Length: 479
Image (cartoon, rainbow, N blue to C red; front, top):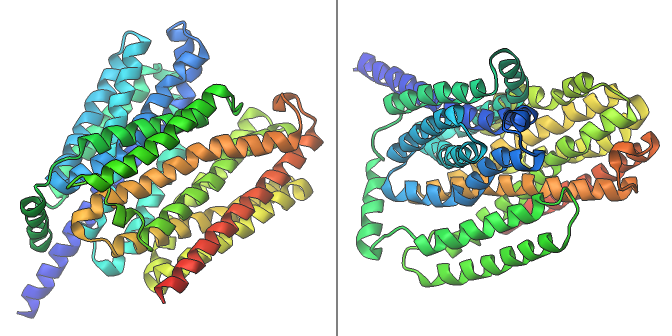
């Protein structure tokens, strides 16, 4: 009997490892597709004889599709089953990647990227939700850390790998790579992910469908998608110049959010249950996630200008220094997850934010004093804090969510991160430009750029302190 029990445990551990590997590959593929296309924009501009503003939609269409639809596909996964939807999302991603590679015209390429973004939205929404079905609770933090590591690897690998492929084989090769990796992830998900929900979760889903006549909330989906697209465009159009069009789009987003809340309060089966959205656990976690992502975006918005203008680094040297963050993130993700499993998610949320605050203060002070060494040291303090926060925050949220709501909650975590990144691009860029005091930052004096760097990361440190206050207040409320 003991041998039988040991064999079952070994088999279960083996299947869990393969399931987690398939989820990690899906996370890697979706992150890689986000970053690999950026490096192709100059080449696409020449290939299609199009302006840079036009080819930017190759990147923007992908991001907008993810942002607008991630919550909706998360809820759909809760209703129809997460495994079949994830498999369908991977199939769509692979097919859209092939269509992008074969596109003869820019509008068709942009449309293919939007479809690819829809597939990626499914992948991002459901990978975190699947952890609760495939990984024992005591190892949830490690699994979250691994997913964070794969996301960081995909983001870091994209620019360098894309540059090499375009140089050797042309721009279509980057989308053919997405096609192949997507197909491998599809086969892995089909083979290794559990085919059905646990019995208690399945029974709960059936009960909900029978009592509430569960239907997909199409009105809520349309309202939320329109709201998120309007907000994303308000933050990204105009290159950090917030003009009349940006204000109009932001007003539309605010009005759309209000209509969405009213609509969700009236439907029998809402896309997002308002009680869940305003819960004392989820709401603070979403707010912290958005604030932290806003801060992390500052390293990508402000960092390149400081390194190139204030420190006078070449493009190659600037890229090499900027790669320190993703590399450190990839190395410490799993370690951060194991720390969360051992020491508890709530305490590690605060610890991660404390490390991030220290990293922001270091970024405001050390680079001006010690140059590249100071910048690298500060990044190596900030990035582990971010990974520790992400693993702890995701673990804390998903641990308290019923199985029938895992998909939509996982998607909301992804959405809050995306909104933080989008907001960070506009807000931290505007803060930096204000501090530099020059309309053309590229031509500003090195001393002015260094001053803008100090001010921007002082503001970033303040945002992290706000997130820490939210975390501490949430902990007190739970007591």
